[in-house]
Image 1 (tube, rainbow, N blue to C red):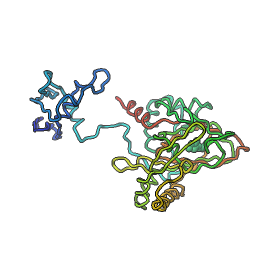
Image 2: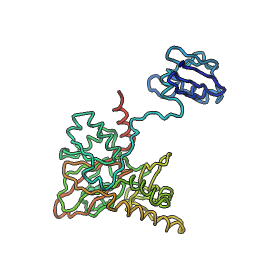
Image 3: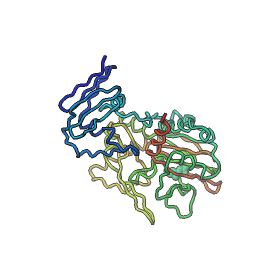
Length: 369
Ligand code: OGA
Ligand code: ZN
């Protein structure tokens, strides 16, 4: 079969020899002309409003492996590689190496199911590092073993991904008992399953907790894949699911310096309706301000979600050892810890965050041939 071009009133249709058909609105072709992008930065320099919406080329022809389009207002024809047009034909999403299907997990996967990698293997190999990035994004949780006894050792891995996410708790934070705590994490109390900082406009993406000491009695960690809970709830209790995806909870953190507030639904969906995020933090939930006649319905749904995530079906438990760093998608996987007795030994985790965009950027750059 021959490659054919068909010029319509508003668009050019291309049929490739392999039978693929692409429909290219003229305004899209004009806006996407390779000559309209800055030669050094690759950013679009073309001003869309400089041409009319109903612009149409005066001619379209194939020149070797390229398509040439002549526009009424331009002396120079636009040159598109036909292969490039095939890849970018409208309606076909752009390929994205960071677009990975999540691997949902439940309690039966156990602590043994958590992907583990050695810090040394990661330091020695770009492939091991890239594969760890992919697995951690999919599973939402992993543990790095064999880190040096130094808070910089964990952060070095974070910086290899991208910029660290600074918050009101700093660029990193020390999770240990403090004399005047502004956060329950800085006490010896139990922390029920939660996601960190849903009170922020954009909650931190990936959380890192590098364990430097865990000698006190207690202090075990719990994790739960909130995406699995939400997907199961969608089937088992669609009404509760509907409430938790639409009603926004007010979250708030305040201390002497800050008063950070944001509203979020407990289950956030993406534009395709898939569960993209979980925002749950009982200690940062502010005074619930729903109209009274919606309260009971909301509390019912909220409690169903809480009971599910804490139940035997979803929660895994493990105790971090010094030299291990747990890494998890804070916007999908909930974490918690058991109380501990500081008189029986020292416990110290060093925490920091890397946002999801930084993670995806590193995945894409590493996937470049
Ligand atoms: C935290 C937290 C867990 C722990 O700092 O956000 O949840 O094990 N810590 O101390
Ligand atoms: Zn936390």
